[in-house]
Image (cartoon, rainbow over all chains, first blue to last red; front, side, top):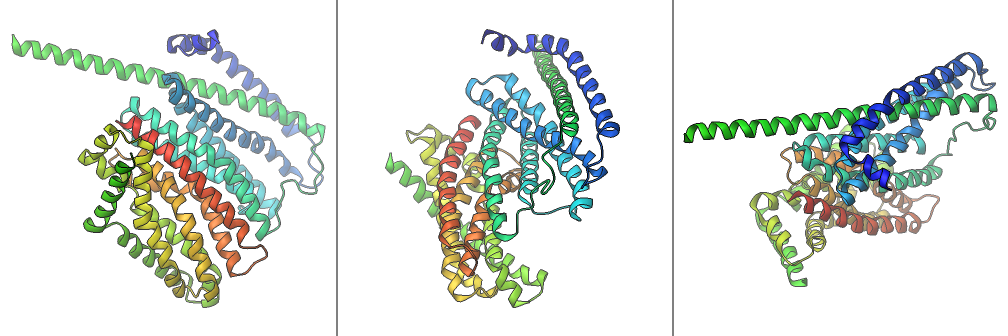
Length: 253
Length: 222
């Protein structure tokens, strides 16, 4: 517990994240390079889906990370609301665009995969729809943050919206599932296909780990940039106040 | 405690009745949307009666959204929100009073007007009451989810634009079950009660979560 509190100190966080970042980025690049090599040249084409199966190696990690980053944002939101820690808000702010990007990547790769497989870029299927709604919630959170002009006061409203949105995500997933089975037969992903073969599973796991490390590295970079941005802002305000005071003294003298 | 609650409720109802621009504007907007649909889709009565419940639900949802940005903004501007915050009444109850007043002046008239507007989209006679009933129990959810969004954007100058963007994705479950229970009333494979009860549950959950979230948002905004 003590280490967690230590880490929550922004100065210590800057030092530790600075040390961690090169290793994280290096490991991510290594895993991504190995994973993409396996996925492109070693993994055989699927006997049903052919070469398009290779889209899966980006699509699945992206879907996973979109959900993981939302969960992380919800945990950060709790940190902001319960412990009022500024670093939790920094983590939330940095996570939102990254999670939104992965949700978008997931949707786009899914569309490119859907066209040859299902004959259409888009179906109003439970999984597709729930990811689209997740993207909309991400964009709403980013939009609310941008609309609040005072950064020190933006944290708590954004945290509340993040938590409310989190409650909604499982409901959306469940309800649309339920709704869809009424109106059309559920189109299950990989229906009729084999349970995933080890020759594909291993590259997928390597790439998923690589993407996760990459996302975490990007998150750290974004958090560090945000901390510095806030420091610059504070320094600017202090400097402006100092000049203000000097000018006032000049007037009085 | 309950006197303060009733006072807020009465004040908001009186404001809506005398200052205007509240409930009746939402009703006119509802009518406008329902009228626009046949122009966009073509006046095919078979098609319209098939998608009628969905049109009514979509129209009601959008009409609930348009007036929402004023729910707390007016109080924030004239300072009455500070008085409400400072009073002995828990902020949660004040939120319930305001969201309830919003529902009484907006959601309830929309639900009551739905059978009438159903005529315009060739809704079958036996479906009129069920569709109105789904709107009756579904619109409170929209009102309370909307209250949370309105509380978050109360102090914003561009709140009117950002509010629907925040609230609309959160209303999707209510829309899904509202439309599916309304459709099952017109005829379908599932009994009306199944999606209807799920929507009731969603509405109750939305009242609780919306109230807590709106009060939390108002509390930190001071």
